[in-house]
Image 1 (cartoon, rainbow over the protein chains, first blue to last red):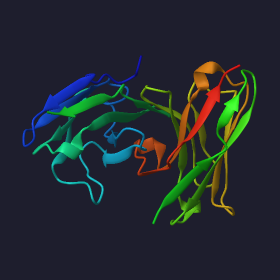
Image 2 (image 1 turned 60 degrees about the vertical axis):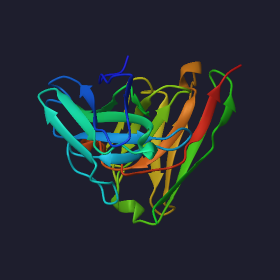
Image 3 (image 1 turned 180 degrees about the vertical axis):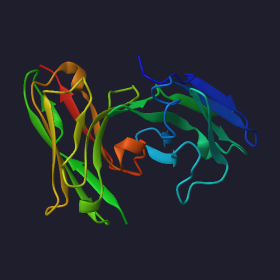
Length: 109
Length: 119
């Protein structure tokens, strides 16, 4: 069982928006503004998409955005594209360790 | 261009040992904290261990504490993971990743190396 809870799957049509939630506790997501999101295509290494809740690394499209409310962080992808189909993982710092969510499979219909 | 290349994976029997390496290039290795993250087949990501830029601070997941040792050689731009007393549940792709684990921000990842623990 993962420390952070994500839905197993989400789906959307091209052009639509989707949101993936990541629920933790006051000891991790709620306690620090250190939530990151990673995208992983099959057989590939994870790629950083969002860090410190809502910041995008250089090169990540602005279609990707992050937010947090209480113990739940969210990743929103707007204007869905076929290449967004992948697994997405949230992570958070918590007292001398990093915890990940179980991952969410995004299907673009 | 930042590059992280892992090596050293393979098949090992339960109770055995293995040493993973990660060769870094394209950035000032000695200025960055480094990490190991693993992914069991068909499963999610699991943080394993982190080491600060000067090796002053080292952290381990509870699942590997006492069995795994992280280290680095800044002169060789290399990160290591010594894995002892391996168990079947340690079977995974092991990734090295750059970044400060206190911010959970891992900005570059290697391609991973597969470790299989089986008799």
